[in-house]
Length: 427
Ligand SMILES: [Zn+2]
Image 1 (cartoon, protein in one colour):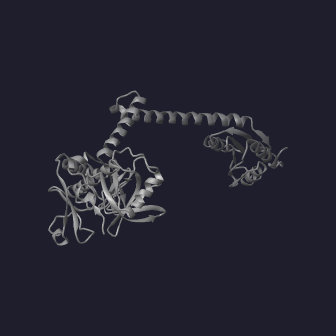
Image 2 (spheres, helix red, strand yellow):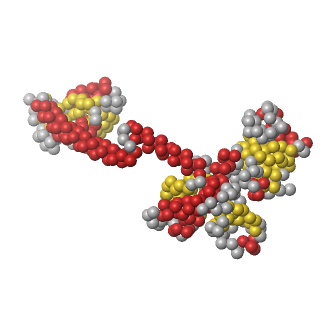
Image 3 (tube, rainbow, N blue to C red):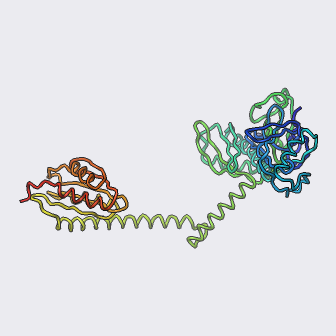
């Protein structure tokens, strides 16, 4: 015996009665097959329906060998749907076992769909048929895949070279079909008769083939649930396009999802405009102005930093310790590291300079360098000094960097570095 799929004839049926004809366990959850059902099982890009059987949640619906299996959830939900279930008010376990025992007793059980979820799927799915046809009409782009997710819907097109404006063209064509309020019907055809229909894609099934027609506009072999009139799709909005190999993935929203997205964008734009106390139409101008100001401030900061580095270098050089022909600058300066680096670079340009900088902060660092006319391996010196401070580092003979874990370590490293400097020229 096969399950009679009531949604084929009436996709608007949201409550029904049926008999349990088989029971089993699916991944540790009980599941029942019914003689007839309005529940849509996952397939054809459309997710399964959810809802209740005698108040017990249906968490998954799977089609297998002509049967539609309803996987039951753990606990009963309160029966507030007005479905008139005879198990209303029953405890979760009791209600569930009543559903499972209905196979033995022959009792009828009452099914009820989560209608907002199903109607959303109908809007997205019919919108997809219309949009797929619109991409063919406007840009000869064929749909090779369809995905209906919990929040996002997408189709994959067999083209990656869509011209500018293609998305808007297809969207406009799709919305014109919605505005035309065309009937959407589903009809079963014998396989031989299908060849005479202008199907958008060849059917993937054989035998009796269900064809969904958007009157005079699109014919698709499809087992999904659809709205009865294109006007019920409400709106198709393309919200993104992304190249994926030899295909283009088009993200879109229909009906209630598109309206919710419009509300989200409206709130976003209003919130931003409120923060800058401007009208929405002035937002781009504000962003341009802030970007220009930010750039100018950064430039000024860089100039000031350059001046600071020059004067700090001059002051440090004047106070440098003489060791024979060498003049040693050894101290800790504050972060940022890049500024300390500029300071070290400026100092090392002076003849005889030995520069041993600590960069104080959360992760203290060391920068050792020296003038080109000084014969000293600061790489080796830094290795020794960092080790004395509990850290590590190294580098070239004329430039080295490292790090120590603490500010105490930084002090120790600098003391160790100065102590390790060669004394031979100190006369
Ligand atoms: Zn379809």
